[in-house]
Image (cartoon, rainbow, N blue to C red; front, side, top):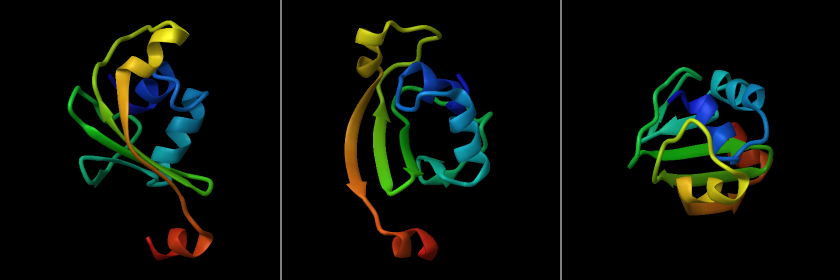
Length: 92
């Protein structure tokens, strides 16, 4: 499954267009590599997303085309979540 769709289905992000925009602006990494919106994600991947003043790192546990809201959190495990300053974003 594409990373932009995965982030929407798992409800990490609300809209696929936001996921796509973040990827196009080099704000999404999979296993330490910056990826495009079309990059395939699979179970076991480590996804790191920087958006606003947040940085979120999750481990992909499963990939499913459709998930109910209650089941969406079962698709990933949060490894790290932190607030970052604007200065930290500029250095990257």
